[in-house]
Image (cartoon, rainbow over all chains, first blue to last red; front, side, top):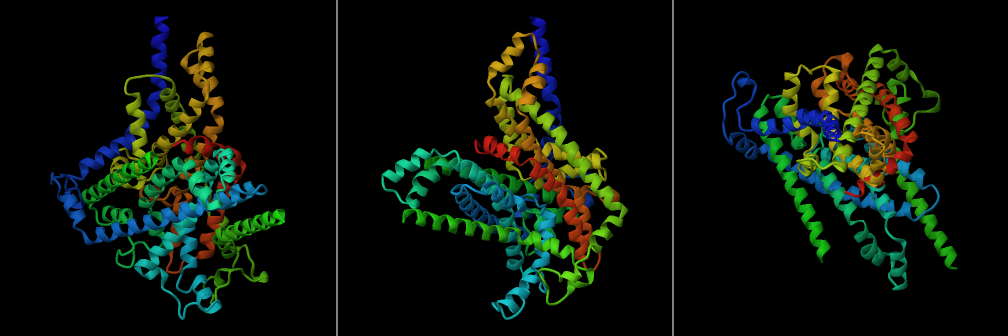
Length: 295
Length: 281
């Protein structure tokens, strides 16, 4: 019996070790290293020796005009795309939930943008929004909405708008599938009781649907906020930060500083700031949802 | 009277859904239609959504298929994605099983810690990961991509599979122990087979993640023949002054085919995964 207990423990260990090893080396170590690097002068000029410089990197990041622009861009990107995806995704989920035929068909098609890779989707959008591209032709010559071609990709808000449109387009399907699954767990009786009490559709939405899917809303909100700050490929492919880094987001700017100018210490500090900001945001989102729970 | 009103509403819902669906697929149709245009027509003005019937050509596809590096890039993507999926499924299932079923010191801390790392966007770690890859000699190597991808997908996979394990009655495990079975027996004979739908659904996500990953592969791989498809596509795009859009989109269509096959054939698992694990969170 004793032997068996020991061998059970060993077997549990054997099962745990591969995952912990991979996770430890390739995720935990980089997180620790990121933290350490952010306090050292770590760039092309200090390959052999990296002196400790305290909070200098953090100071450099926070006072950097370019970082501030990129930070504002990331905030705007997140503030626009997260609600847009959630509202459209929930709306489509509710519509799909209310019909009986073709549910699976709609679910598959609306999910297609999610499985399209970022690189491909970005290139399609870039091609469509080209100054001489299809969209401008449609706007100026077919429906004559604009007098001349809009230079979508050559301005800060133009480029960001294209990226935000892409992010929303790509995210609706995920929200739809997640919300649809949540809606199908809402007890039908609650809707029936609400009907008997004379509640209209809008009233039902706010008193039955929303409370029922609150957990999912929180889950989506946290995941999408992280996703919003993680935006990288679309910006890199569509504008590459141009003109003059005006369309950079925090991560494309971090990447540029690290791999084009060799400022690894600066980039580490920047990454750490973003991680902390996201941790605070996630905590706030949890708090907010829990407070609503109590009311 | 009431029935007709209901019918009208239903008709409207279908119309809205179909209209939305058309908007959603528009960019993809445009991609396919562009890939069928002769290369000379790609800078035509006025631009057309569809090529004219007699213009339709497969020359872009032919060009891609004639490139020997295309096959290498395709194989690289398959290799990296499949190996990532298999390793991730095994190690995440093992982690999930141990965390769900056994009390060992630091168990709660471990699980919370793994979950907390999900808050950090993957790309923020690119600088220290690059430093690590240099140390390990993993620069410019396909094998260098895989452990990073696995580590990346472990938290979400473990979280999801743990949900599935917890849904299985503990009596199943106990029956095996009474029969003299070991921890391994339970894991391989009970847990793995019975959580297969969950593992399958998470594996679709993991396949997609590895298949389309761009920032890390783009940073680590610079040899033409070692590129995965997303890097190959972006390479086509930047190569010349004038992007050969026909080639870019033909290659894109090729790279979407495996994803579509995986997605459509695993539809059932996929939804099961989202409903069981995701919503709980």
